[in-house]
Length: 120
Length: 110
Image 1 (cartoon, chains in turn yellow, orange):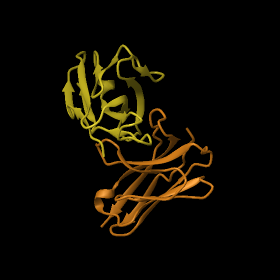
Image 2 (cartoon, rainbow over the protein chains, first blue to last red):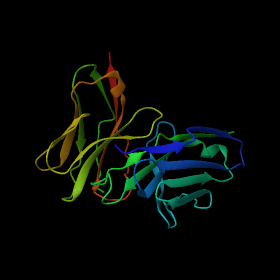
Image 3 (cartoon, rainbow over the protein chains, first blue to last red):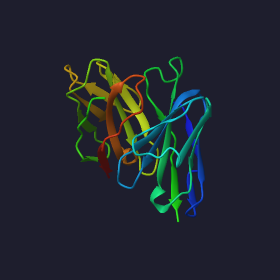
Image 4 (tube, rainbow over the protein chains, first blue to last red):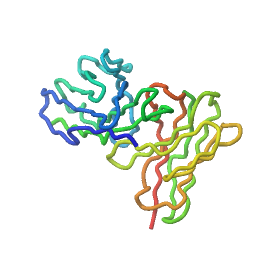
């Protein structure tokens, strides 16, 4: 299957600092990428959808100025958690979908390994 | 996307078949059934998907009832590495993001 890579896998930061998480599609062009957040013992919650070259669409309750998403190329999307606080500590997961002629011919999504953020 | 209902947890002995059920009684004609799993502290992994017909790949088999209101994911010979949370998700192909419910926590025991 297609490969999606996230970096870093783990990050610890101080409260008030910003953290950037990268999501790359390694062997296909991802026209759309999704960012999820998962708190302990809970399911994945969609945060936002990003399409290459356009502004991200955020789910209700997700602050767009706090969670900055950039999808500048067909293989890279970044999530920046600005002014992080302890309540932002979570497991952040990205997923990607190719175009209609790509690997994903019936819409399955491919997920990164996840990035665990701990804010002290 | 249609709603799905899965048991909260299941156990399976190693080497036996694991049969994970999913109800999706409000599924519409253009919606697919997708199965993903999430091993602890990892991103979800695609397993299989189907529309009407039963499907099989190297990981699992998907059995969809004729009325499409329910399906079963079958892991033919479960191993300890199959211990994970399994998510059944229904949506149109090329739909937007996958909406994850609570899934079924499968524990494979020695």
